[in-house]
Length: 240
Length: 241
Image (spheres, each protein chain N blue to C red):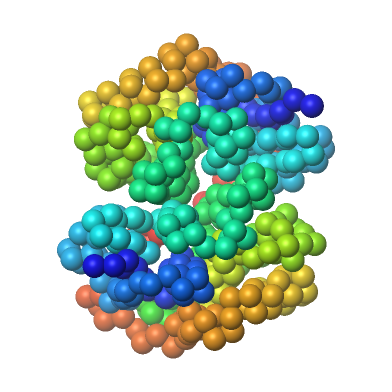
């Protein structure tokens, strides 16, 4: 059995891995784990990832979780072009720096924006107070601004003149609030220009394909009570 | 021009960078950025790191933040022994997996204990509800359970027989609640034994030295807390209510 990638393109980190693998011609079997059906909570999936999260990788007997680790694994194993994770000491450090920073900042904000604006009210049927939503969107705003001011600055891409893992992780994150109807690029010409460069570098078709699901998040049918009960505790823990 | 490391050993990520640098005899200037005195909000420090967080590294003109990134940088630049960040594809992936996971699963819950049990009461004079504390403790216990079952398992260290960056980052995080008199190592003998092994690998003297400021935090005179820091904290607390 070759490389298997357990993904749901609803999830931001899964999109980064999907795009990376496809862009670099890495052969893999896509194993879809349907999050809104709670498939990540199944016993079968916990054999692949006991932490019950996507993305997950299975390469023969070797299993791996955490998107940053998976991206790095694919980078090392498949010897992708250097610009994705440069050999140069300082250039690589810049990529590592972004990949470390984003966990508790942009990722968290993007996740909360989607859930507070769309997924709680539409999918789970749980109202979200205007204050909570406002606070979440304000925090998102702060983190998107940091992305532009501290990481992008006047460069073409986050870590320098070429696209890297950092850009891929960042753009797939930002598409989460975009899917929720937030206009994160509005009034941010530098970031909008970067987004266009990203889409061109990745390839428009691949970019659209990876984001088809998230862009339809507003149209998800409401969850039935059983599914809702199953998903709620972990959702609440996830967006803390 | 020597390497500059901007740190306060109250912070777990700073301790990881400090311990690693001392252990490998990396020559650096310890730029003490006193969190309790609000020095991370000073103009001098904001020039170094506008995010006002610790640690930061300055190597000539090159400035780097995020401890995980700094540790990798030091490993590569100073050619640390390979077991710290093994080149083998699978072993290395295990280090990277832990380093990614710990940001949300470890650092946040461990910090929360110190806030709820020590800092908030000392700074505001108000105790935090038992319910909130119990919830935070449950979260820590859950993270430690996952750590033992998924990352450590029955191995000596996270990657196997030798210490790596993952163990270093893990141990300094689990030490954090000690400031609030919460000894997370009491939960299991496996965890306690792993801690002893990590401590011995690092060197007990260095380990103790790195943790001494943390261990004395409860005795610090909080009435002298910098007003800007106090204000920021009060704002944060109001928002989280």
